[in-house]
Image (cartoon, rainbow, N blue to C red):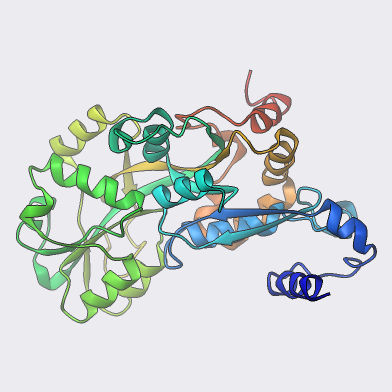
Length: 340
């Protein structure tokens, strides 16, 4: 009784406790499938996007049918977005069984699956599989206006946060520093989430921080509304060489006006955000989840729920996927005519 009561309370907290859910306790218990999505820090882009997708793919046992105004998710699935340290942590969670899926930068996914790059010396995550490519993740280098930083080279000797261990941002920040001839020894490196780094910047104790994610990022937007910031460009020969050395990077642009006080377009580079899982997940489950991701109801939720939601489209679902697709996702894309 206690277990069932706690389960129902948990469903209520996620907004999935609806009419008809309790029609059959035995069917409820048998057909239910929990599906966790590892995201990132709550101030980033992964977390709110993860919440939208979790709601979209959820369809608890006993829910009204989609065509009757009910859930249009995968049958029996109850999905939740889980805050985490980001890409590396999400892969480790999938490997360790604490997550069924997660959002991961395309570069980190490719390295992990092949056991190369930052994953060299660790066991390759050869069962890592893609569900979909979601949207471009722009590399943000945010500096306080007072710091005088206007280029990556200006970071030398400055107090700079590279994000937390386990994050894809930390991986990419090291690559960017290296492209400009810098290492962590050349800066006063700290390892904080972007909201924590923003707090330090407001207090005058941080000069700059890196963040990789879709724009507008909540932590940066909040910071820009409270103090003057500079969005430092990542461009020129150094950026071109980085793209040549690491083909999963692409040129990108943060439009002027995205953040208060940053009126002009800012050149940078980006990677793709992938939704990944394990090859061990059921083919039928991942097929149903992929199908739910791309239905018309999900389209409405994504378009209305977040500025980056509009960039998540079936037409770009296979862009920048540098690892194998899960067999269930592959089946859907072939049926939908998106994959030969």
